[in-house]
Image (cartoon, rainbow, N blue to C red; front, side):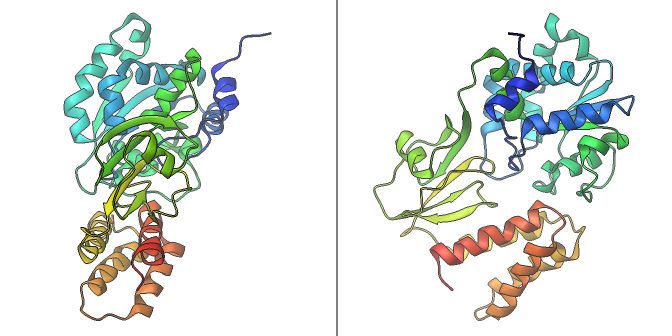
Length: 341
């Protein structure tokens, strides 16, 4: 049998992006490759923005699996046609840029990667707004020197990204997984960040298809007290009771545990709404005004619950990007599963 190329390997294991959206990696790579047939140059962006509070997986990989991450980028570089890739941008949050950019550069000096060493550029993610600066089209805007806000899609970056050229944008963990797949070491796992009221906090490598309950038990973190959890992210996630843990943990792979007796519910809701209000880039009215009004309403002793629900619905239906559409997931699951209005 002919040796399988990297795209066949990726497609065979069904790898999806680990940045939160879960888009099939093979489809994205093929879309960029096909778009490059009509364009002279293309770009690769390594997304290490990790703007979701509490998530630590990409930092763990950059610190401990640096060469594997770089090798995954190198495989993409080869697959997309190295002669057409003009630049490879490592887009890192400030904390990661300071801690790991030198380590990445040292790996890039290895003989295997010298061919694309001169094409690599590092970008430090702006500290504000934090969350939306990890969205793929916002990253393109930032690197190009524009305002940090998302673009309308379509067109997608695979067709029209950096300077309107085909651009592959993948998360740090996605490139790491690609490297494992190429070596035959991929076992269908992903990284989870365990935090909150747990005994063993940290980053764990477990099956990508197991439930939240299995994750807690496998990491010896299943609580012996009355609790609820947030899955996907510390702010942009879904709230579940202890009897709803059959669902998998998706999004950014975070699982946060709350002690029901020790949780200040009003403070928690206020934290989420304040985050969304602060992090809104202001590009769309639904998010810019909606997050502000929701935060304002929630801080009143008595508030119009119908207006609150209408604002949530408007965000759900009208937001330009994932920040505004994530708020309804968080708030609705909170009121439906944890704290009934």
